[in-house]
Amino acid sequence: MGAVRETVDYRKKNGVVRNDFVNLLLQLQQNGQVDPDHDSPDKGKEVSHSPDTDFTLTDELLAAQCLVFFVAGFETSSTTMSFCIHELAVNPHIQDRLRDEVDSVLSKHGGQVTYEAVHEMSYLDMVVAETLRKYPPLTELDRICTVAYTIPGSNVKIEEGTKLIIPVYAIHHDPKYYPDPEKFDPERFTEEQKASRHHFVYLPFGEGPRICIGMRFGLIQTKLGIASLVSKFIFSATSKTPAKLQMDPKATVASAVGGINVRITART
Ligand code: HEM
Image 1 (cartoon, rainbow, N blue to C red):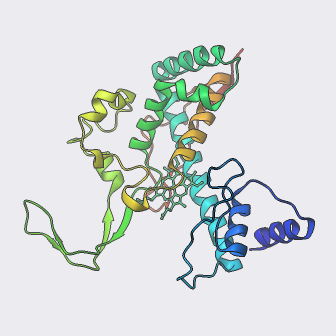
Image 2 (image 1 turned 45 degrees about the horizontal axis):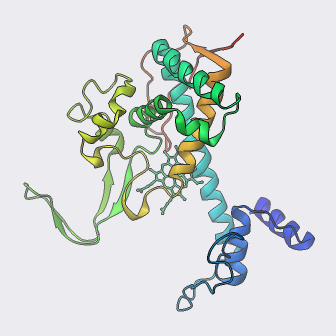
Image 3 (image 1 turned 135 degrees about the horizontal axis):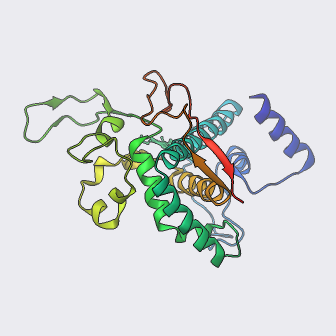
């Protein structure tokens, strides 16, 4: 609350406008709507909002949005990067292939890890997708049933109002969908392999109207991190690196018992 209040007070007092999330929330609080971008086709037009709601964005709610974006936005991506580094350390052939791709794409882009460069890295996309399959940072999704539903082919009826847990980790480790599920295998994410599976057996970002709002941002920041690390360092297993990580059953965001231990060597 203090950090947000200080930022808001400072901006108001000094007339500071920054093109960021806090600015959007301030516009929403002050005008009941977010202003269109300067170069947006909507600039100058009246933007509709919902005058029929009596919703007020209080300072507490504003701070809560900042907290949720901070927790949901950083912990998930850094967890993904950590598990990815572990798998690269215990699978040197995958690490070598990834580094070859990163080196070759970066050389075309003047050595800069840019948005465009990362989009060209198709093997990186497969490696990150497989990391999110094996270690989904949010291991379950929560829902409340809004319409009574009978699961097809069974007599299981879910009544309206029932709280449901969708077991993402268990689905991602079900050998019916992912044979030899403990094996880290980015080849599961070729276009062909992806098309052969039911869409909902891969849920690292959830699904439906409440799917992760930061999915693209989360993916790009994770890939930027991995590409930049792999271009500068080599990761290898040590005596403290288990081949199979033991997951902490009590963790809210997936985490390994004893943390992640790898040797990091700068490339020469
Ligand atoms: C690798 C990175 C990330 C993963 C694995 C992840 C995963 C998830 C999952 C599983 C959900 C629940 C979706 C559902 O119930 O269907 C979620 C929701 C959410 N995520 Fe992410 N997320 C990531 C990055 C981010 C980032 C970068 C942000 C913001 C900058 C973010 C903001 C949110 C918010 C605000 C929600 C709640 C959305 C709602 O309830 O409408 N996430 N995320």
